[in-house]
Image (tube, rainbow, N blue to C red; front, side, top):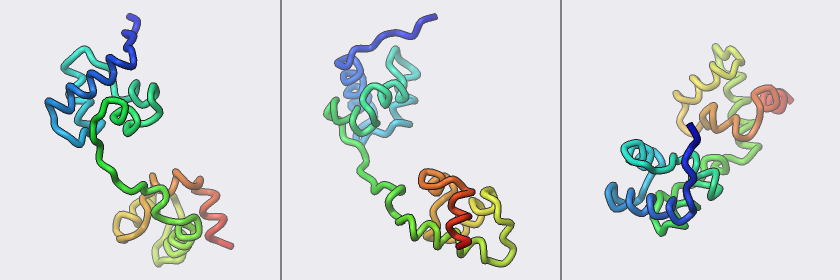
Length: 130
């Protein structure tokens, strides 16, 4: 079965309808639940078409949450220093999974997912060890 084609106008109209039903700011997860009950495009298609969730919503005149990007909350040097602290902490296994668990317990440490947006685990460990 072929996926339906959606015009840009149809995508914007569906986003506006979802915002009317769900309220604003509209989240991708809220929209996802809404679109599953209708003949509407997925959030993934909207992001592919418009480049980002926020841009798709802007095209439809729909408000989104304006949160600060976690990818720039920490500088590269901050991330390396935090990983260095983890690596030298008692009981550190030095693995990505262990770091991820450690980060959850340490306020101010970037999550494993956030860290991976910046560096591979091998690269950040290399930098933290120098």
